[in-house]
Image (cartoon, rainbow over all chains, first blue to last red; front, side):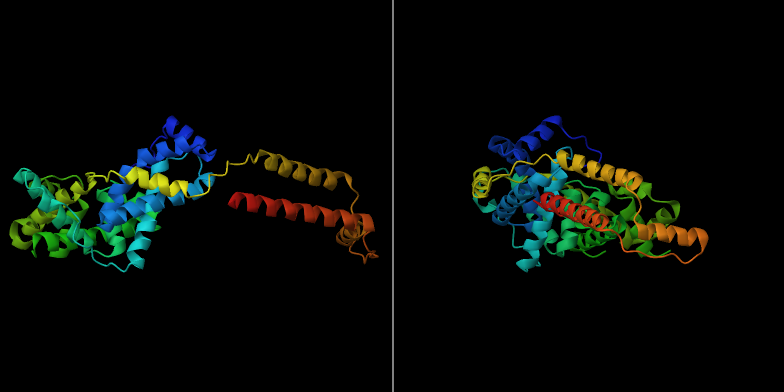
Length: 184
Length: 161
């Protein structure tokens, strides 16, 4: 997600239409961005049900602020910022320092090839390790790897300097290395 | 050099590597020499690349619930409809007119006696004879101030709406 990303003219028109109260335009915005926000919520909160709540809250919050949004700006960074801040609030208020085990359906996936099951198990292990991080480092790791954002972009979302994000990312990776790879 | 500085260096060069040997090859000579003689740092190098590769899998989209869109749309429908954005161009025109009015007033309206007295004080270094400003000047100044404050408050309120 680059800051220099050009705004899709159709996205601009969609935003303008939604700002004028068009329900179909709003629905199209939801359909365009819900998957990305779902992934972000899922990675950040580690729970599909909470991620679903987060996606809903993000769009509701965006709707409330839509009148003030400049139609020429890209929509995705704005939505990611809202979702991240809401997600961090959810993490803090629910006082869930650690992720619950990922709510997956590996046990029900008996007919699947073993490679697929192995990939799922690896993802669960990874999510559990990410879940051991504190809220801010967790958000940094998720935004960097899941949303493919640069340290500068993450800094803008979390209101941190680029160097502070970089240091936090280094430390988070070092912790994950120790957890996933064993002490070296 | 310490293991800590080598590991920090590895982190700085980690981005985009797919194999530990690739990462090792990117390191400066001093760090490569350290890696040759330090087993724990070599191990850390392998683990770091593996962790980085694993973390990249976070960008995969997990299975999306079938009712996600319906849930979001239901939540949005419970919200009041979006208020169409107001055209604020008239406020810009009003502000420009206000500035113009001030400029015209500054140029053509005679300076109040008290200000003239101030100028004469500066110019001649003599004690002026002060007089109170006239009622018209006072009323004009008060009206301009109220209009300016009102326009600012209105603009602020609408910007937050």
